[in-house]
Length: 127
Image (cartoon, rainbow, N blue to C red; front, side, top):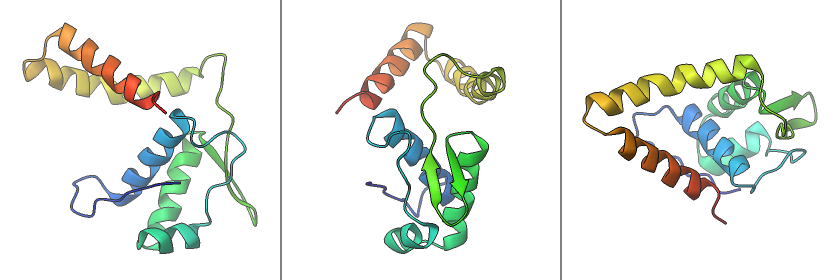
């Protein structure tokens, strides 16, 4: 599992970690049933505080992406093949809407936004 943290980024480290785990799952490099490294091991590998990794894992658990099993660690949930819950759909819309609005305000056309989304999805499906 390759994760790269950028300490100088404006994005908090725990968010960078969660986002990269999500991306690894989206790319198929991690799959349902796989176990993530222990909090202690991953913190050591990335040279970050254990609380940072723990916060990231709990964020992933809140989103339904992993489940934390005491004494067993964090296990990736299987990807839902038949649609997502209404709550997850609403959460994603709430996160995407401001980004799309900002894109329009900064001068991107609808076509450019669609191309950007398409290109980004293609990057996630490479490998």
